[in-house]
Length: 413
Image (cartoon, rainbow, N blue to C red):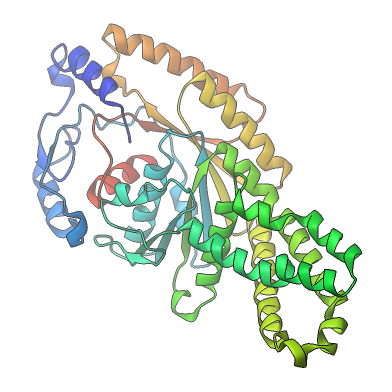
């Protein structure tokens, strides 16, 4: 959401009546009004060719929007030309504090890439998905869904973390769960059984820590991209969970790699015993197959770890809002990303008051707070070196491809 209803009410009350000439009040079907220099009649042509065709389950009624301001708050640039150049595959991960507009920024970037000719995939790794709401299209089900409207192919995906975790749980139990533990106890291998118990992988999956869902989701995306039919994507965007999950996610690939490695080593230690009686139990072949699956999962987790740290193809974009609390959290996030060698170049500061909203008391107070927050960024040792991109505050929800295109044109330039 680009703005709360409270902010919208206050801005309309404080600004629209006091300075009506400073805003464009043209209401058009599909989205918000543009600055006075924009030809409003072009807006109809744009929207008539790019309105979403929604699924029957999520029909969207026609709505009229009227933004108070669509003017960027400052002459900032995200250096989008550098982001869009080249045909090699690139990954962008957008993350930050909850409620700062990560999903809107991620979805708008996906639309921007697609409109610039890049076949694009945008994925939500947040267990509390909101990507469907952002695109006004049903993206649930764990499969790639085509988004209608952009020039180049754009697909979106919301992964069901419980389903992905269940697959992981089934494979791990076959290789290191209670079945193997009971078998080892029966064979007098109690010491190895105790080593297995120390892994506590079952507890990890039954009560997952923050970050596990995202790690599994990203590994599933890598699995998708390994298939021939998905080789076309040149831009992959991840809409990540709030900061706490993201920080845990950074260390999980190492943890899971080590845990799976222990299970596989344990599997090798008891392989001679199981092969001696495989004709009795007749289960050796199935376990070999499960072991292969676990090894493939381990390889994908290693790829997740390498993906995070690949400076040539990956970038983490921090999204925040101009408040002291949000900036402080963003600073800690940047420090953690640096520690994990995750490349960061851009900082999106969302919900900046536009210049035209400066003549009311409420807006003046908000601007003072926001100016202090921006100064805080410029003096912060973790954030000062990042490319600062200011995204304006608007008085409507950013929802649907036309709206996302509008937002993307203001942020990604």
